[in-house]
Picture (cartoon, rainbow, N blue to C red):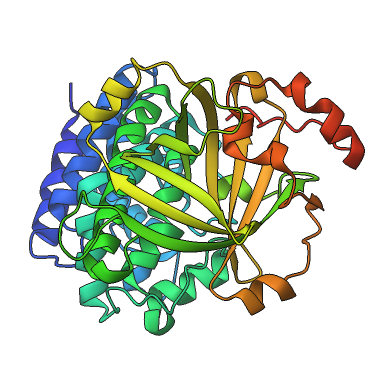
Length: 409
């Protein structure tokens, strides 16, 4: 049962924020409030603390107060004092409020109380999925932030100072980058089981949106879409170098991650070159061949298929490779960190992609990489399919490679 203090607080907050246009309006606060109630029912939390913290979490948002994180608890305390709230209740609510907001991918959460974790989960769920995307666009427009510029790379690992600066003065950032810098990090920062389940679906929707957005933004450069029809094949030259990992970078799982399942056909081939792939929420058939017998320069022909078509391929005999792929960025270079699963668990490969042959040739091995294996046939997907980690150990031992496991979330 909602207390009279909660009811009065809801009336006050609704009146204060009903005309807000920043994406932190009454509708946002109402959704956070109701989601927090839903989560709290299964967590044995103090409901009044949860409800008040949810209703007051944006009462004086730091983004509208020049980065002042004390403005929120200060205004919340003034309101609760005017209502003669219990001192311990008031203190706990005001301790939770400044800790709710996301402060940068490199900033660890500082929320020791269950009630605060519930409100933080509810607030982060509203920054994820379809509503989170619309709110990001709404806030970006209000701040005159550029929607998207391919020349401006996302800043994936910002500390609180950098995150605050970019949020308040987004001259060197874009709204789409904000999705990479914040939204895609939220799934792995949920506290409660309820929020984790909901975040998974919303995260996948966000990935699907980004794929579609970039395809529509610049069709002639989209990997799997031709200028005529989305399911026609498109041939590209892929420039990359492959390395065995020495270790996983400490911040690697703060970057976007997606699960991938590859099926290589035919099953009997010694080195299959036809691949059917589940790539997050995309599905495609790809044929890759070396250009001029150089594995670092591959021609890649890709055809988009539907989820139903992919399901049909699951019925065809073929060798599988299952892995998690992280879209990592290291010192301005984009790379893919493939953490293999199931029978190949322990293997981690890093693929760096390049725009020019000159950049590819000049690239120096990063510290977290052990050795280059671009020209090693055993690391090719068509050779890895159907293998176990033990099958690779004779090859890996030449590089003194040690098994690397993905940590549990």
